[in-house]
Length: 449
Length: 136
Image 1: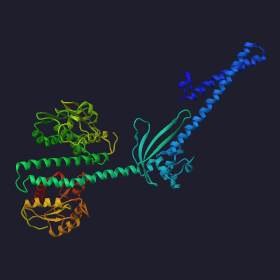
Image 2: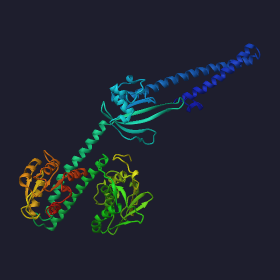
Image 3: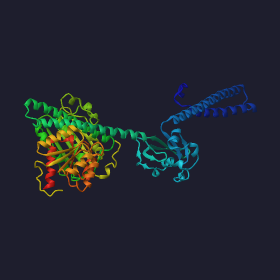
Image 4: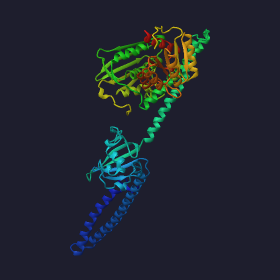
C-alpha cells in the first residue's frame, strides 16, 4: 500500500475516496452558499469574499485529488481483474462458478478442457439434470453439478478449517476422476449467492498411487523368496540335518538366523505400512470378546517375557466391556506392537501390565511398562514412520520404527485414539481408547486424520 | 481315490511339490526325504496338474506365484477335477495378504502358510497334521 502520509497512511484508496468525496460535497455546498450570498450582496464584504474564494480553491484541490483517487481505483481494479484472469487461465485446476439456478457464470480454460465443453457453449444456460440427454457434450459438466448422476461420488467431507466441502467425483464422457471442492460465495449486499467448484484431476494420481502400492507389494513378495531360502537353509543346518555342529558353528548360525528373521519382519512391516497408506489393509470388523483377544495375545508373549525376566500380566476391571466391534487380527497386531516395544525397552526384572477397562463410552486398554521411557523432546514423533528414539538407537535393540505407525493407523481405523505418557528412565504407559458405539467407526478404509 | 487305509506318515507316501524356485524346492525335498516321505516335483502349474492326475499324490504343496498358470488356477482345476479333488493341498506362498489366504481356503485348500514365516520343520508338522485329519 502506498504511503499517502499522515493519518491516511493505513486507509485504502476506497476509504480515502469516500472521505474526500464527503468532505468535497460539504465544501461545495458551503462555498456555494457564500458565493451566492456575495452575489446577492447580503453579506458582501471583502473578508467574506476571500473566504469564499479560499473555499473554492480548496474545493478544486479536493476534486482534483478525488479524480486522482478514482483513476487509481479504476486502474487497481483493472490490474486486479487481469491478475485474477491470469491466475484462472493458468491454473492447473478447473474452476466453475454458477448461481442457484445452475447457470454458469464463469469457467476457466482448464475446466473447459477437463469437461470437454466451452464456456461460450453454456453461458447463460440453466443446466438441468436432464439437459445432457439432448446435448451429450454437457454430460461431464452435468455430473459435476449433480453428483448423483456421476459414475461415482463420495460423501462430501468438510475441508479443514473452512466452509468448503470436498468430494470425489468420477465422470463419464470424458472419463476422469476429480477431487471437487465446493464453496459458496455469499454476496450479502446484493443478496445473490453464487457457488464455486474447483476441480482437481486425480485420475493420474490414483493411477500412480496404485502403481506404487503394487510395486511395494511385488517387491516385498520378491524379497521374501530369498529370505525364505536363507531361513530354511540356516534352520536345517541348526537342526543338524547336514551333520553335527560345534558349539561355535551353532552360535554363528543362530546369529545369522536371527538377523534374517529381522529382515523378514522388516519386509512384513513395510508391506503392512504400504497397505495401510493405500487404504487396502483388509479390515474385517465383527463383534469380538475383547478380553479374550487380549488374554490370548498376552499369553502368546509369556514365553518371551519369561526368557527376558520381565513380569507380564493381563488384568481387567469389573466394568470392562464384554463386547467390542473391531477387527480382532488388526487390533491384536496394534496392541501387540505396543507390547513388543514394552518388552524390547524394559530391562530384566521389569514389569509390563496390560489393563482392560471401560471409560464412559470407550473401551480402554492400557499398556504400562517400567522400561527406559521416551525422551520428552521426541514424544511428538513417536507415531511417525521409521521413527526410533535416540535413547534406543544407542542400544543395540532391533526395531523397524514402523510398529507404532501401524498401531496408530489401526486404532484410528477403529474410530479410537492412542496416546501415551512417558518419562525417560521411568517407563511408559500407552492408552488405547476404542468407542463401544459402532457408529463412531469410520465406514471406509480411506479416512482423514 | 484308493480304498487302502494308509497311515499318513508311512514311508513311500508320495507328496507332490509344485514350486518354481529350485533352491526352495530342493530344500523342501531334502527335508521331506529326511522325514521319510517319497516326493515328486513339478516346476510349474501345468506340469503339476498332469503329475497330480497321473501319480495321485497323498498331498500337494502348492506355490502361488508360478510361471504360466498361477497357484489359484491350479487349485481351482485340481479341486474341480473328480480324479484329484480329494487330494489335500497346502498352499505355500510368499503372498501374505488376507485376501490371498481367504481365496485359497475358499477354493478348497487345507492350509495356507507363508514360506518366510515357517521353518521346514513346521511345514512338516503341518503336513502330518493335515494327513492325520484326512485319513483318520
